[in-house]
Image 1 (tube, protein in one colour):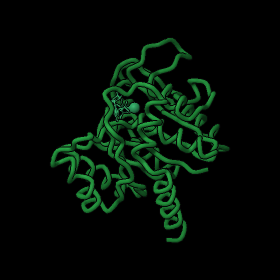
Image 2 (cartoon, rainbow, N blue to C red):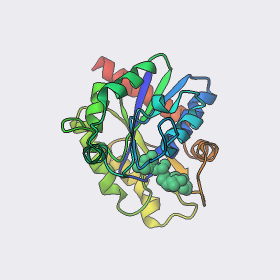
Image 3 (cartoon, rainbow, N blue to C red):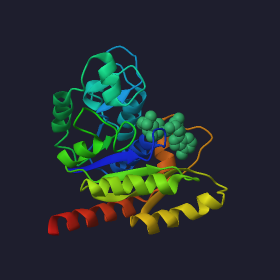
Image 4 (cartoon, helix red, strand yellow):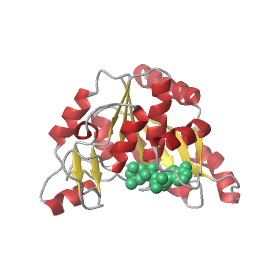
Length: 241
Ligand SMILES: Nc1ncnc2c1ncn2[C@@H]1O[C@H](COP(=O)(O)OP(=O)(O)OP(=O)(O)O)[C@@H](O)[C@H]1O
Ligand SMILES: [Mg+2]
């Protein structure tokens, strides 16, 4: 099984869009794909209903796993998991998360989406970087295209490395058709500053609300071949170093 943690430089940067679209590309290539959003916050629906990220991930991957498999922990308040958990008096259930992960071990690919960024805490002692380390997941960083992204991306990549996580690359989400100077120059600067490839520029759409739209945008902006080659190269390095 090939695993991947899809994180971002911030909340709302396009992690779900990229994860869902990438899941679809892998699925269309014939892989059996699993998706996991260990914790989703900001959802108040009844138990067994679909929070929006989990739904888009499942629809992207074309899986019929139930919501509690795709998103084992849900909180109503739109907060970091640890904070939402404290306020709900219900700690993040790592056993449920681990069980959901174990259920996916027979898939060819498993894509895991963080809530917010890599240092966001799930418990007092575990953040998403710790979860990625536990599950041996390389990291894909989704970043914004514009001014400010150099610093956010650099910090995320360096935090990943400081925790021993291989970084597959960066995907810029929401790249405009008429980029300004910052947007034009950022991809090359990210590569130079972070020493990772920018694997895609997912185009900015007027609206993007469905898994099919995410799949189309990601197919346009990201080369699956480049992603797979880079992933394979990293895995080779990890196992031979
Ligand atoms: N390429 C794009 N073009 C237009 N809108 C986009 C694009 N990518 C993402 N969006 C929109 O931006 C918003 C945030 O995207 P998304 O939900 O994928 O971010 P996220 O990083 O997963 O956020 P969260 O931290 O809440 O999980 C959504 O409303 C989505 O539809
Ligand atoms: Mg999301």
